[in-house]
Amino acid sequence: MGLLDFSPALMSASAATLAVIYMYLYKLKPKKPLNPSYDYIVIGAGSAGCVVAARLSEDPTKTVLLLEAGQEADDHRISVPDASPTLQQSDVDWNYQVLGGCSSVNAMIYMRGHKADYDSWEKLGAVGWGWDDVLPYFLKSENNTIPNQVSSPYHGAGGPLTVTERPYTCDMSLQFV
Ligand SMILES: Cc1cc2nc3c(=O)[nH]c(=O)nc-3n(C[C@H](O)[C@H](O)[C@H](O)COP(=O)(O)OP(=O)(O)OC[C@H]3O[C@@H](n4cnc5c(N)ncnc54)[C@H](O)[C@@H]3O)c2cc1C
Image (cartoon, rainbow, N blue to C red):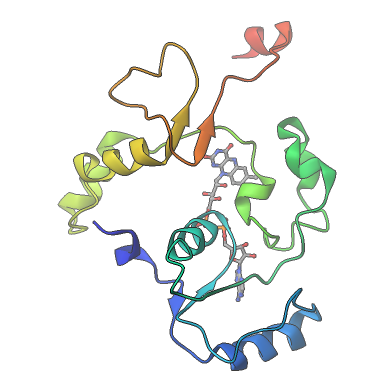
């Protein structure tokens, strides 16, 4: 399974045309002038789109345009996990459209699907999406800093996605969970 095998968000349309439509619809100004064309255009700067665009732009010979329909992720509540419920129905929650997509409005809980889910997808015909296929990518993406998980065969270190324990746990949450 390659990084780009699953990227329906990648389009090869004219960057200039898309950019004009984007700016017309959303009345946003790009921060720097757009190129007349790009090697890759990624539609949607959500969780997946940002990763795909970041990986593609690691090649300095390629140009990448990442288009996002939502607004800037500058609401201070976006960086506060416990504040995520207050973002529902807010300005950044226009069908979850904001820079970062659902990763900007979610609860910042590191969560994977169950092994059986991936294996059942594969049985249904999604070749390359079984648990044994996706686990190496989970490991590669993860920078797990939790002491009793660092050496686990199910967790990785050194990837771009840092996973930590919450720095503070209140007594009430222990009762709740
Ligand atoms: C309230 C909530 C809490 C959650 N909590 C957790 C959690 O704690 N842990 C966890 O692991 N997962 C959580 N999730 C799920 C997780 O956040 C999502 O599964 C994941 O972020 C989806 O990523 P994505 O890239 O598929 O889509 P998105 O992140 O939604 O990205 C899609 C992007 O495309 C943009 N877009 C849409 N249409 C266009 C267009 N026409 N042109 C340009 N851009 C467009 C959107 O604005 C958006 O930015 C939560 C989700 C929600 C909604």
